[in-house]
Image (tube, rainbow over all chains, first blue to last red):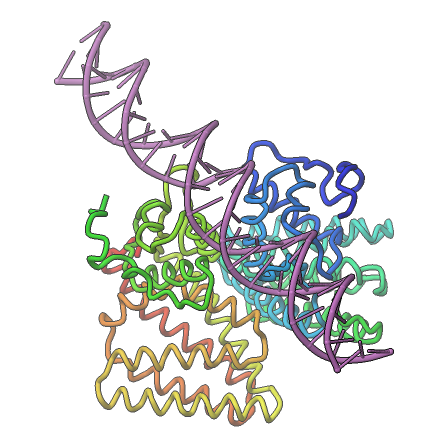
Length: 240
Length: 240
DNA sequence: GCATGCCGACTTCCATGCAAGTTGGCGAAT
DNA sequence: ATTCGCCAACTTGCATGGAAGTCGGCATGC
């Protein structure tokens, strides 16, 4: 029941910030996606469409449609007549995700390095700025700012490679794993190595050395995976 | 308008083969996907949810929900209050798709070649059988059978690499481009080269030479792209 | 005590109605 | 002849109600 009386208490989305320009389905989609990403919904199952609709102040229909989209993206599962469930990720899922992302970001770095001057220049401008931000965050020991810069670096890589479908594919699995990354963020050692590897990738792109840029970007994600997976196994995190 | 009077004429799905075990949404989803894949719907825009619902013998709701899924997969676009549109693919879209598929199938071949003996053996059994079928199809000059074997080879590659998300990502873009591939199938020269390259990939996997298997699989798709794209440009196919 | 069958509360599924928005064409004014 | 404005027909967005399915708990039989 979850005390529907006090709807504004601390629920999934406080009566919806709503982004009033969009449709209700869009609002529901964003609110639910954010809620899953930020671990407002734990990985286990949660509630019914009715309950969510109540909390978001709308009817069941737009919630239902938003859930279809989220299911398509692998964030939730709709059990035929039993409610909805937030997908949990096993270590094997994380392996899949890192493998896929390593491959695609490798290709993205390759494509940028091999691209024409205009593409490369614009990408490098963005990457340099992000690298500077990351260095500043490291100097301040600001872990959250570091994580944000890290996200931006990887996103810039795939969004500027000239292949929107590749960027979308990466985005989908990154959404799936966002929650897990946040959980493990503070468990890891100080991520000084990341900046170095980002700089190396950037340098290879600047030189136009496509194979090297690709290999470095791929290796970077593989390092992260090799650091993360044993940690998960050790902590016995079967699903998160 | 498309003469809604003669509903049984030769429409999208002849009163639905229906797969009675599933839900209406699932039926609508499959019927529409098949219709788009098989070019029953031309790339331009088509009709309204109402019309489709009529043809499939159901209400608007399940059709609407199926369309949401198809939109998420990039097959159709729902224009806010104006109806639905089947997505057309530009040559640049085809470039994106081939680039993405080359990358992912390359990685899949690599993973299989580097995988443990059991994985490799099972994959090789499947690939060998498919290669035999393709050879037989070529000997019979059966282009349709060749295309089917080609599809099966590439699907086997990604479905047996041990990464379901990779397989799904490939499947999504292959669905998008299926129609275009069918259109161009008969324009190309006799695809004797494909079999050779498939055999080379298979051999590299058998030897456990992962880098080579990956490079060959990647090159195979790049060859197909280099053969297809100029053809599209020449024929002035801006969208299909 | 333990297994079994039934029932009620809960869920999604789907049909339908109304509201709101867009478009194309017709008529009137210039 | 041309342009502008309005209106009717069409579209999806969303709410709601009934139908069908699933599960947990309770009563009943052993």
